[in-house]
Each structure stands twice: as C-alpha cells, then as structure tokens.
Image (cartoon, rainbow, N blue to C red; front, side):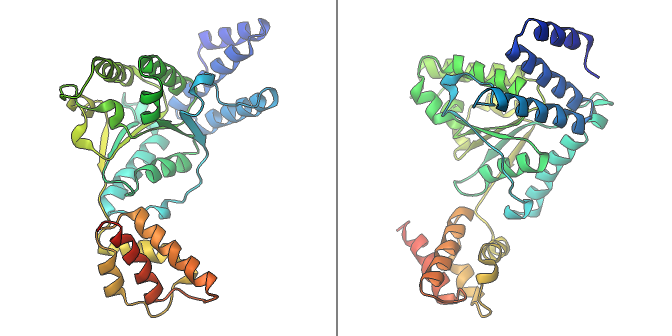
Length: 318
C-alpha cells in the first residue's frame, strides 16, 4: 500500500487543486506498488493517470516543454522474435525481463532487479530494437533521449536538461533510451574534451548513481572505446552486439521475407553475400527484394532478386 506521507500529500494536492502535484504523487504511488511486486496495480494506476491527463491536456507526458523533440515517446509492440541474436545475448535480455517481473521477490531479500543497461556494438545490430522489445515485453512506454541533439542544441545548459530528464525518469515509469550515448559519455581525459563536456559527464555520473527509480535506463553506443571508464561500473549489465553469424543471417532473412520467400533459394550464395552486413542492412535488402517482386508482378523472392539487393548493400562500402 502507499505510504502515509504519500496519502497525506495526495489529499493536500486534491484540496489545493494542484492537478500536476496530484498526478506526480499518484505516479510515485504507482512506482511504490511496482517495487512491492504489485505490477498489475501499478499499471492500473498509471493507466488511470494517463487517461485523465488526456482529458485535460494534449500532452500526457509530464516533462518540460523545452524537452519536446529531445525526449521522444512511443509504445512499441515488437515481438521478441523480431530480434535475431546469439543465444547467450538472448538469455541475458530474458534475465532483465525476468528480474523486472520478479522484482518483488528480489526485494524481499534486499536485492533489486537490474535496470541500468549499456548496449554497445556497430550500427544496425539491434541495440535500439532491444530497448523497444524491453518496453513492449514489460508493458512500458519507451522514451528515447536524443543525446547528440541534447548536447549540440543546449551547450552550456546540458546539465540542467539532464536533471530535468532524470526527474522525469523518477516520476514517469518507463524505459529510457539514451541513444548515441558517447556524445556525453566520452573519456574525460580525451585531448579534444572541453570543460563543459566534463561537467556534463560528471553530472550524468552523479544522476545515474543517485537514481533509484523503477524505470529502466538503457544507454546505447556505437563506440564503446570512447566511453569514460567510470561509466561502466554505473551499469548493472553491459551487452555487446555484433554483426550476425551465418545461422542468424538465415533466420533473419527467412523472418523478413516470410511468405515471399521462394522455395529454391541458393542459401550458400545468399549467406556469403550477406556476410559482414548488419541486421538492419540485411533487413533493408530483403525488403528491397520484396518490393522488386511486387512491382514486377512476381510472386516470390528468388535467389537473383535477393542477391541483387544484397550486392547493392555490399557495394555501398566499396
């Protein structure tokens, strides 16, 4: 149940007609219930708040107006099968989901579920998709923080914006993805560093250390070698992504092509041509092959159309 202080504050905000305070305290109560393992109740409270806010304002997300365009909300519904990855990495993602769902049991033993996650690896290998799947599987909203825009647009006040974002993380339960994270996480001793960016990184280190909300914080970077070493110990899990192996490439191609796949695909040729391509590039190539078939009034994707699309992707690197 909610704490006595929360109940008193809720009543005071009601009689003082402080609607925003009422919403904030209600969301804090939802977070408290979630920590106790009462996930259905917590979700119901958040649903009620979202519905009521929708009746009174066009913006149901309580963050300052000057963060619009920097924090992008969505409600992903991607199935887990959309993410093709090695079994060990899939197991670790399943562990994050399982610990979240069993957080009440962990709390009974003085433990907390892992909720600060760092994703590293080349572009297009599934980092952003992982954040979407975590949000979808846990029934949470995904909030993507566009870190590069945050830094370039608000140089000189980035730390203040970060504080507003972490206040939102505390008050609005969800999955928060810091995309292009190396924009603020670069090593503090780098020669091209400036005083402002050192302050931003120090602020982030402080905020993430002090954060004890129920929200999941996911940071994604294509350049883990640029990150300050002090960051790594702030994250409870570090997941490393890579280009798909042969087995994964075949599963990915079959998944994307679906009913468009031909019965006589020359897999040896196709898999060879897809080597050293990212998940996203293979996905795009498969969709190009499907469009080619549709526009030529064909019925199935054959080896020729698929290899042509893959060659185009490979040629872009020459």
